[in-house]
Image (cartoon, rainbow, N blue to C red; front, top):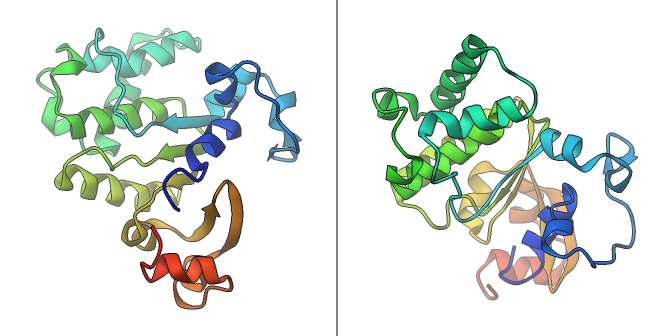
Amino acid sequence: MMTMCGKSTLLKVLNRLIEIYDSKIKVNGKVLYFGKDVFQIDAIKLRKEVGMVFQQPNPFPHLSIYDNIAYPLKSHGIKEKREIKKIVEECLRKVGLWKEVDDRLNSPASQLSGGQQQRLTIARALALKPKVLLMDEPTSMIDIVNSQAIEKLITELKNEIAIVIVSHNPQQVARVADYIAFLYNGELVEWGSSNEIFTSPKNELTEKYVIGRIS
């Protein structure tokens, strides 16, 4: 998808984060989640089930690595320390971070590298066991090693939960996506399987983007 075409805004609509950014925004149409309009669902419940990972790594810098994951669990009523500890370890292992931080879980999250911080935010999002995970260009601001680790994680996670990822990198999209929606100037131009979009796009704009004539 192209830069400045509305893709990040679209993600924020899907779990109603758009209301936090602009309380006066007007929405036409419906976004259905299991057949129900998201604007008819309690926002807190919706965001628990539809998690979000932002482009800029955003761990809670004043909290420890451990508490970055424990905090949302406690906020949603999980109080048993053993259960919290188990979930924290599971999530850190899932994102490939456990062996890198298991000896410094009480250190501030701000001490992690940018790529590690991004994997921590993914672990935090997974802690609440979302049914959908929204990812807004999750690798665009981190190094190649962590980018590859996150791409590998995405290919593994998509077998467990639905993932909606925004990217303006066609090569990355080809590697991780099963289905693609191509947006241009705030409109949906084309939707189809990854194979269809890259090998036989139906729209001229899509074809131009795929072959690199527009970006």
